[in-house]
Image 1 (cartoon, rainbow over the protein chains, first blue to last red):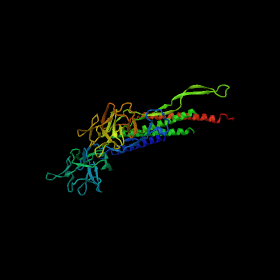
Image 2: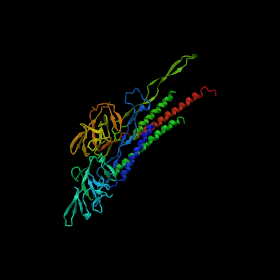
Image 3: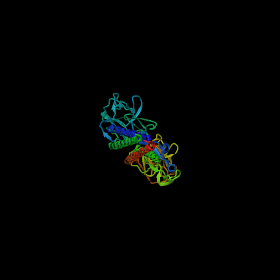
Image 4: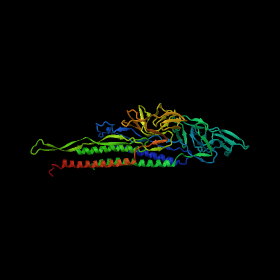
Length: 261
Length: 252
């Protein structure tokens, strides 16, 4: 009977975690280029009821009666599908339309990947994130008015000279992975490579397998409110149902004790 | 005394039923989960007799049949219901669903395992695998897709960049095949997958658990009340035995 307690408990714990995931997604409904995550459940191993000394018809020719051991969560699955593009009118706001990540060099020299394209300029004219980490490009914009910069969908960065001519300053490249889902999130929106993700492949935006850059746009969160509502309802009701199993297991135990109340 | 053991048997069976139901309930949202159902059965019935002493005679007597009864109750088997679970839209390229009969085949550590959970992943080598890292089997063995941008046709053929890279090897079993739960959404069987194909492969969907919340809640109530009835029976027997042991033959 205590097996039933653990079954019910595993359900309560797993669906509680599922609710937390829904809360996390909903909280990031308006986060720039946020990628939603989803939990998935698995069952656990099965055991024969016979081993637990339940009465089993020894003449039964069918499979032995079995009972499962509850549920468990797989690692969270992150969905990298495209978020919609929002017009921002900041020249250094870059959205990726299609596959790929920007490469960011952090202060400690590490390399991380992100799709958050709200870039700024630092005092030295380098393109940085809001955390002060550098976009991985050799472009230097010191002494240049940001409003004069134009960035093509292929990642080429131009400046409009006072003479009316355009001058190319450099190139912003994108990076893709065989298995984006294998990336691990180091901090908000910044991803690190892992053994599962594979090594990054560098390419120019718009080339085969790489998305285009859109200047003056930001990628919105890919969280869908309606989908999260469904998840919220399913998680909450499943949690309550498992609490009901737990209560029933407890009631059976109480009834047994009441035989000699 | 017979009735006391019958009450105990009933309580044990309800405990077993609760294990099965609580496991179904815990897996209310487990992809590809198939609900179990505990089948209760009574033991074979046999004739019960009443011993009537012959009048005036100390030894012997006659047995008067009073009818048949079952002497206990047991969980005979757990039956897995393989009916289709509801489809959930995920829009994830590597989520597959089977509509109709059949199982995806994956290469387990020892044997081929069968599953209805089509949430697959891609490794750094471009192989199509399950969450455990088991390789998904196509008609030509493990499937190398190289990219997660796959297109899938309803017969299970997988295309990457317009070129066919593999065909999912779907195992379809006959109705009499004994398919056993292995755990972690996998099934095993000794039967050969030789039945005629009548399935459709969908991409961007998952098959949700086929557990029905209403049905399991009803089962919980049934278990609770059946257990209570057996408990009342046990208390009654305890009271009868109390009288037999302490009051019969007492001079007070």
